[in-house]
Length: 338
Image 1 (cartoon, rainbow, N blue to C red):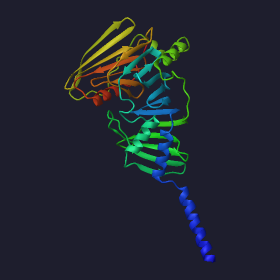
Image 2 (image 1 turned 90 degrees about the vertical axis):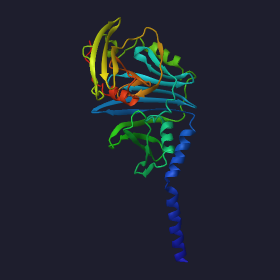
Image 3 (image 1 turned 30 degrees about the vertical axis):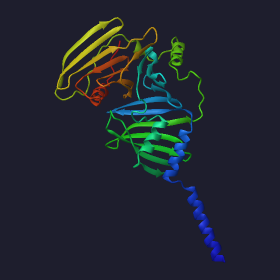
Image 4 (image 1 turned 135 degrees about the horizontal axis):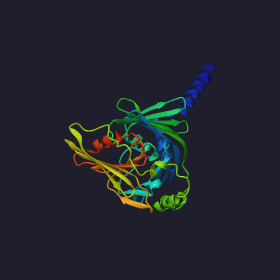
């Protein structure tokens, strides 16, 4: 009788212990339910991007409403330069409040590649990778998955960190050498966020810009009207060289035109970014792309972006998008402005 009681106790202890341990499938199913059942969410955190030997940091705020509305604020902490990616039923916008302008895309963003700061994208990567690696840790779980960055094939995987309550705490994106390239840390996630009816309308952002127009604007480089130093790309395709450079004056600043010829000819334009008197929307073909220190507009044969008060434009019919991005990513020096 005593042996039966002891045996029963052992079985009960094993049963209780087994019930307390979650399998990989259990965790992923619960995480899936947690995220997909949320009709809205809002999160904030920090994003660190490594480009060559340089590191760039952003404060990130993401707002989401089903089925497909997004408002993402990215503030570069080095200069307080903010850009907003907005998606609603009318299209996708990249808004630069300090310049009073926006690019407008008809784009599949954010579904065209992995997105390190969007819960839906992280969940999709987890569910789509049948070879994902699941680990239980002291504080929770880690899930390692493949990533999809068509324009940066050097990024191959991400480690998603969860706590015991299945809150996503962070994401680390690694390259083919297992070196960290992006680190996203989530400070707060609200899965029951409330938004005003017009929160995802472009007009609401324009009103906010108008409200802040006469307040302090710390991004002083946006007001510069001259370029002291020409910024040359550190990467130039083999068999291609600079053959001409021209500096011209414009009403509100300067424009520099660099012509490269050879096997992969391209044109690089650098000009002082101008602040529009009235908010303007510029229709653009292509997709938004997060470069090291800014959000760019990428099309099949061109890329344009604003960094440190300079607007850059690269165009070529002889290069792939990956090559355009490689050139753009190599232009990371800060010009001397006056």
